[in-house]
Length: 131
Image (cartoon, rainbow, N blue to C red):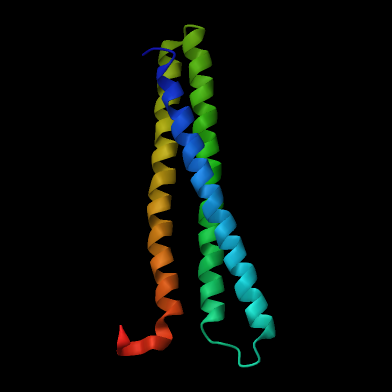
């Protein structure tokens, strides 16, 4: 394995972190908006609390995806140092670990996407059989 192989993760992880951050910010804004609606709405829409709970769960998932991706990037960088200094086996294993962390983050992302569908179902629940 060459020293440049772990560098493959740098551009991938950077783009994923940008996407995760954008999702995190969008989710935080949604929560703020729903919380404001909850405070202002005298009828207390029954859909708000379940939506906010689901959004908070998604926020935690996205935060964890970001942490795991940063660890993947860190292990990839350390792997490059190990390869540079001739510790080939350790460098390879650390790169494998970096790849595993990135796979975990991607699987968590798939789960978070499925949760977003549940949030939409909650929002549209008042439409009943029309859909």
